[in-house]
Amino acid sequence: MHVVHLACTADVLTSLLGELSDTCWPWPGNSRDARLECAWYSYKDYCQWWNIADRCERKVFTNEALRLDYATLSQKYMRAAASRHVVFWLQYLMDTLLADMVEPEDYLLWMRGVCTGLAEMESVQLLNGRYLGDDACAKLQQAYYLYRACFDRLASRSLSLGSTRWTARPKQHQLEHLVLDFACVLRTNPRHDANYMGEDAVRRAKILAVSSHPLYVSRHVLLKYALQVSLRYR
Image (cartoon, rainbow, N blue to C red; front, side, top):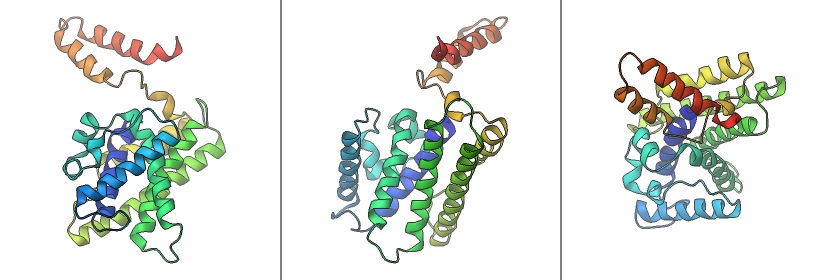
């Protein structure tokens, strides 16, 4: 699930904030940063209302951060645990903005579809145990199709406008395998394969590998990985 939380969600967040802060709708302000500040307060109020402790940093809602690639944004300003809650705020935001619109523009509907798809995928995993039933697999698959179809429409629109938003990446192909092959075939809940007790586990394993003797590097790294994965079952 780190694929979703650290790559796909970061792309959606920056692209959507960029789209909505281009004009004075829905947030007023004379500059992009002023409008993004309104978005920050909306996100902050949402987190306070639901008592969410894992939050993105304030810097995510700045013009400077929107220019960063998803890897830099994820590694510095948004942890994986925080991005899990961001998708629900994005869904709430788009539902609220479009609630009073009689005929919203297509790109707004597509953005809501992307956010709804991500939020539904997250909900299916949170509401189910280690293994998924037929209904859960069907919902997860439908949510992915909604997310991907709407994202592809937004990506095509961005290309026609000469914009770099809504970029299609190989990470999305990994997400496709995660949903269609891993979850819907093996019936395993992806949430139970994401260990958030140590988000820097990969970095620490690499440091251990570099410092280990070549004869024992495999043993040390495998032991480190086994301990990291099994900590949640102790």
